[in-house]
Image (cartoon, rainbow, N blue to C red; front, side, top):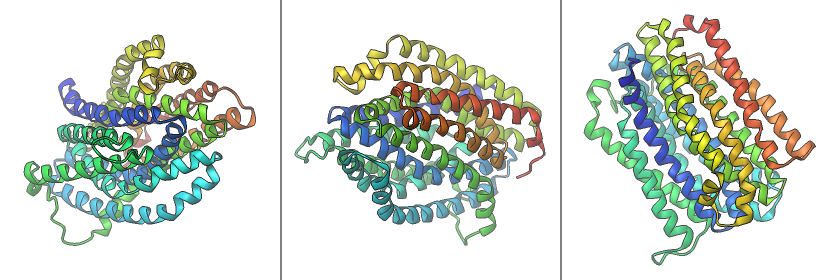
Length: 440
């Protein structure tokens, strides 16, 4: 189960998936960087806000993934279908609820959060379209949890590539107004992302019906709502949902604090965020593998292998990101040029690019460890660790951005605060060993 070949087979499709997904992130930022600094900054606020809400649905899917992984490790395949079917229904209904709240809630939140009228207008223009993506993204998250849980992740690669191609194509058409379409600017970015999510979901559904063994797992054999199953998923996922939402919401607060520093720092931070997420791909792919294989190991009653496996994966992640760190730290101008041709903005981005390149090393180690904690199924502990870490993180950001305003790169040093604390607490928990007694 934890052989190098199996780790590779699970990880590389996730890796390619994240690359494809982040091509969307890079191209959106790069395209809007050519529209204007206001749009570039607003897309950061709007994008992180959307992502924070999406993480509620994604968090629920992670609970389903842990359960599916556990049942897969036990070879109890017939129990996977009820988990998938009920999770699918729950997440769709959740998306309907969140969409309804967002229609009125988004303008209210942004009115009090954003200080610049120009940035506010651009953010609303983006989110007015982007929130329609909740319906499709929430459902797609459940399909993802199924394929990751059974360690059949190749479908994620092709679906992500399809999403990236669709998004880039419609970004080009709608943002700049090509092929007879109107020039929509930041609104075009929101519309193209929703179209990409629709196309991807259709592909995943068709693939599942044609290629997956729906009878073996009992997929789509939905006879009634199994409240017990939903509550079992919620018992695992509720703290993941809170954890992810609070985590990304804190990043949203980070950008709101940066926005109060001015439009240029906000634009610089969006470039930093885009590159940072791109650099995270290798460790993120390995961390997802750690999560599902730890769950599978425990399900196969091989708990003694968990800690050595996590240590091994942490070393691999560090080794993978080290060359990336060296490259981005020495040649930051090359990466800044991807996002903008404004020489002033490029120069302002360089210090932040160097910081995120260094922070990625700490992230690689800590994220592997933290996903090991989640993989044990003790999501309450994972949430407690995250919550405590975020207290120190947001305190640092608030002090350096608002109380005693510093340069934008000093504010970005908060990444070291976050990942050092969360990694240390996660490792201490794994050493303590109380997770060995938890049954799910």
